[in-house]
Length: 185
Image (cartoon, rainbow, N blue to C red; front, side, top):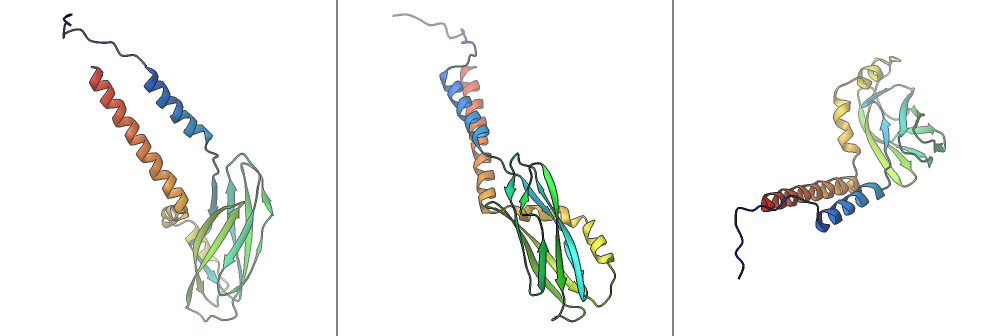
C-alpha cells in the first residue's frame, strides 16, 4: 500500500476536456453566419398634404442581399429603394405619403419593414397630421435621444433566443472553468 503525501499539488495543465470545450466554443463562435442590418428612421413624421421622409438602410455583412421595403399605414404611400444592397454599405429609401383621409391634429402609428433576404427588421413610426408645410418636426425627431432606445425593438424573437442561449452557454462555461481550477488547486 502506497502512501501519498497530501501536501503535493498537481500543476495546472490543459487536458482533453479543456481542449474539447475550447474547440466546441470556437466552432460555435465562428460557424454562425453573421448578418447585421439596421434601419434608421425618424421616430415621428409630420404629414401635410404631400410629405416624404428618408430611411437609411445599412448592410454591415459581407454579402450582397436582396432588399424589399414596405410601409404599412392607412395612407397611400410609395417606397423608392434599390432591389439589392451591397456589402458594408448604406442606401436611402424614400417614402412618399399622401394625406387624403386624416384631419389636422390626428396621430397614426405605422410600420416600416425592411426584408433583407429573409431577415426582417421593423420600425414603428408615428404619423402626426398637420396642414403646415414645416419640416421642423422631422429634424427634431431625427436627433431625439429617445431614438437610441428604439434599437431594442429591432430584435425579433430569433435574435432574443440566440442572445440568451449564448449568455447561458457563456455562464456555464465560466462556472465550470472556475470549479475546475478550484478543484485542482
